[in-house]
Structure formats: C-alpha cells, structure tokens
Length: 448
Ligand code: SAM
Ligand code: SF4
Image (cartoon, rainbow, N blue to C red):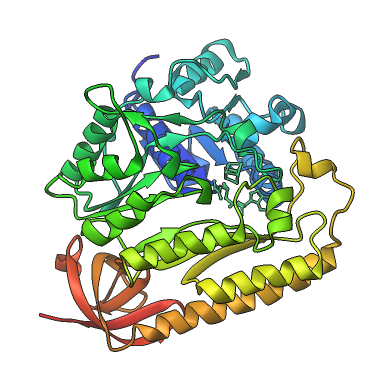
C-alpha cells in the first residue's frame, strides 16, 4: 500500500474499554500508511465503526449509523471521492457477511482478532474494488503485528493484557466474538507500559475480559498471575496509578486483594460483576460462583484495604428469574453498597444457550425490576459520594470542567472531581478537599 498523506480516517467506537484500546491500535496502524484522524465524518476517506454486540440495541444502532454513512458515501462518490466503510469489532464477528447483505455499501468486515490486517484489506478494496471479509481467529496473536502506540489522549491509558473468554456464561456472546482466553507476556506488556508512560501516561488501566485470570509468561518463561504482573509494572518510575478491569469472581485470589493494602500505586477501586444475587440464577447462568463467594471476596478486599470502593454489573430478568430471585439481588446490593454499577435488562443474544430458553421474563417485569434496582444503586452511589464531603482525596486532573476556570479529573476511587484550577495542573495528582456533591461529580478545593 502506498503512502497517501492526505487520507482522512473517522473512527467511531461502541462498547467497552477494550474496544477503545482496539480503536487506538487501528489508528496507530493506519497512521503508518498516511492516514490522519478526523472528527468530521463527511470528509473521511475511510470510516471505521468499531462495534459492540453485547446487547441487542448496540447492533441495531450500528445498522442505523450505517444508513447515515451510506448517504455521505454517495455524496462523496458524486464529487469523485472515495469513502471506504469498515465494520470492525464484535458485531462483525457475530453477523459476518450478513452485514454485506443488510448494508451492501460496506466494504470491509473485520473481527476483533484480525484488525491488524486492515491495511491489506483496505488496499484490496481500493485496488480490486471488491469487498473484504476477515473473521479468523489466527494462531499467531494479533499483538505480534500491532505497531507501538504513537500518542495517548490525556494522562490515562488502557493496556490490554488478556483477551477472550472460556467461561461461557449462558447469556453472553463474548466467547464467540472474542475467542479463547489469551494472556500476553510480561516483556510485551512492560514494554508497552514504558512507552505509554514516556508519552505522558500517569495512570494505566490493565484490560481483559477476565483480567484477573491473567496467566502470562515472565522474562524467564515462568507463568505469572496478575498480582505479580502489577508488582513488575509498579516499578516503572513515572507510572503513579494502576487499575485493572474486568474481573470475574471465580478468578479472584487473596494475594490480589492483599496487594491493594501494600502497593500504593494500585487504586482502591474494584469492578467485579456479579450479575445476580440469586444462587439459583447464578447456576442457571453458568457463572460458577455463588452470592456467598462474592460477598467473601468483597470482605477480603475490605480487610486488605478498608477504604476500597466497588462497582458491578447486573442483569435483571434472566430467563426463569422469579420475584424471590430478584429480591436476592436487591439483598446482595444492600450488603455490599456499591459506589457505581451498570445494570441491564437481559437481552437475547442469538447463538447463546439462554436465547432458546422458553421461560423468558416478560418485558414489563424486567423494566419494573430494573427501575427498582437502579433506584437502590443510585441511592447507594449518592450516599457514598456524600460521605466524601469534608474528606481529602487525590485527583489526577486531565481536562477543563463544565464551567470557566474549572478543571476535572478522577480521584483514586474513580470518582469524578472538579475544582478551580488551570491547565498547568493537568497531568498532576493533587490533594482536594471535597465540599459538595453535584450529580455524580464531587467538587472541592485544591490544597497547597
Ligand atoms: N467478563 C465480564 C464478567 O464476567 O462479568 C463482563 C464482560 S461483558 C462484556 C459486560 C457486561 O455485559 C456483563 O457483565 C453483563 O452484565 C452484560 N451482558 C452480557 N451479556 C448480556 C446480555 N445478554 N444481556 C444483558 N446484559 C449482558
Ligand atoms: Fe461473558 Fe461470562 Fe466471559 Fe464475562 S465471563 S465475558 S460475562 S462469558
């Protein structure tokens, strides 16, 4: 493929942080071939939708977005310009060439494990005026073919350390779209972390579908777990904060909890999806953990680091969920007290085992349960936010706030905090005394 410095690329990312990481990597990859990023869709020579398949509406949103892009493509064609449309990510993997049937103006369909082939696929489309499809699960990891990161936005960065999933929860499409579990090795991860820090990263979030199941090889070929990996990364001088997400309750172990008590760079916040508080439903979901096991993990973390805050994911209305099962979920929420949570109505994903179950919960029951759960979670979040009033937290400031003179950042507990300040404070971790909570943002004054 020839270098074409004037080509513009527009990329839209749906879904999880891992997709954000992948989109950045696609940009890194295509910059080498002369593409520059644009936020102005009509001027794009190349449009990439990096999609998510986790819930039904996400895929429908992609098709509706494609309808709009189609018109822009036609306009560009009329003025003698090209617009190549790529659909990447999990919708591609799940829908395959059905995308070409529903949206025949799409040029490339590429899955999450083969996007490193994008330059070749795009060149093929340009050269041969043919569509291109690549949905393989290659034996050689895509990470071996991806270029180094070239720029990061702000002072926080994502770093994928583990991918795929072998757990097969019965509601979830991830094992089918992202493939089998795979852990990158220490040297690769350490090198990428060093590079991110060189580019200004102060905080790194280690990413994986099951990040705490990480089991990569170290520099001597010995298998290490996520605690050992974090201990290595914590030695990087400019790196001040480390987080990891998303964990599965079955992969949690005491050493990791204890590390929160001893490693200052490891932030006191854990996202640990539980999905349901009913053991009957957890079993039906094939989660392989119980509510009691979940509460034990929370207790372990609180013992190691008493100020730890927690977040979770919930699914309401899984097939067969009774009022009693749902009350168990509400009870678990009351026991834990979550600082943040993501809750969803169960959404049928074709091809997953739960999709064909006959005991589906009626939509109105799901809506009513979700509203009750979300009200409780919002109340807990507000109470936890209010508890920070009068306390001092440490905020990594990154951008301007909503109002003039205000700056915004995240504290160690991943809460949004704003204060009066200026751009010279961006990229610094500063102590802030919290005075007031507005919505989900804390505001306070920066201490000397
Ligand atoms: N690996 C993580 C775990 O084990 O919890 C979660 C990854 S998944 C990408 C993110 C969240 O999407 C899940 O925790 C679940 O709450 C939600 N989710 C997955 N499939 C779903 C479905 N069919 N309907 C509703 N929510 C779903
Ligand atoms: Fe999906 Fe379950 Fe794997 Fe998480 S652990 S990605 S919910 S199958």
